[in-house]
Image (cartoon, rainbow, N blue to C red; front, side, top):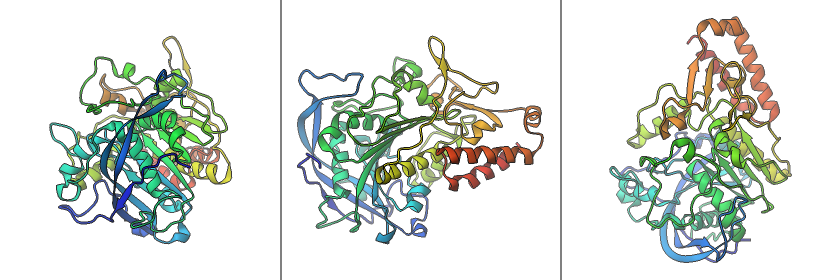
Length: 461
């Protein structure tokens, strides 16, 4: 039961505006899956937090905080829910929208969520999501002033409590009058999810805020760099375009554990890049904690960039051009598997199967690589287990964007034929590797046909 007394107010569904659709809306026709898409405004008084007197941001993640002030806020949440209550599985996933690019980023295309009967809530929690970044602000208020011009988040200091209030507005004990964003669904549990910068904020939420709020039943952190975000930043916002004095590798280094004394599941799913960052704070699995690392992957993939670009074109968002040569093993299937396992963990008490970790050696430590230059150990998706290329987190250049993209170097034709002989043999080995991933619990059966089709299309190249 939450100790937060603030009652958030929900209004909507929100329609109209200059563009006529919600920013970042799903690229799927969600009605084909029996789903409703509806946007709502969430407003009220949010609390900011500071370290309690004598407390520190210790490595163990057991952080003590106290309220430090209040401010009014108004934000938006984009809700996807089954139209038929009988299809609802009782789990709501609330995602912390990422704002590193200067606008809301979230993925509302997960087939596990839509086919599995979850509800999904995409919540704008940070100032940049509303106001954007200079010199070309692309936040909600600039993208559609008519629809979003009334939104306001005074500081990221209030983001943690805004996230709490978003959970309360859609959770089992929510106020259903005058507006119920869940459409009367019988919500049983709420899971908090966030990736990259949002995972860092969730790290702080787990360590400092969840013990006070008790608003969530579980957390999924994806591509998490092992460091919680600051509690107090004032007017400052994260701007990846401002180059820091330190190198990307120094900048992306884990500093704290995630506490596992909350009695609820915490699940971390990382690529090879975040495995490198998290190595100093890698922690063992427990009854309430699972940590996965995927060999041969990186923070961003070419496929992910391509798919996101289609949404940016629709929403008329200015972006960086697609980058050639970056990693080509997408993490999306691992995220869908995480949703699946979290739901089972909460409903059946079945934790996700433990997985091997990426191998490291040396001083300073670095990834151990096989004869193909692919990381040893860790989760081995079929593209890493039966490779046509060296995919890794090794950057093409020494800047933050290159670090996030890693690299992909196709094998020479002679090497491919020496490894597999012909296309049929390659595809047979690839399918067997995919089935091993399914059996290990890191890949869902629905993803296998798509991976096989991509592998078949990659053979001629």
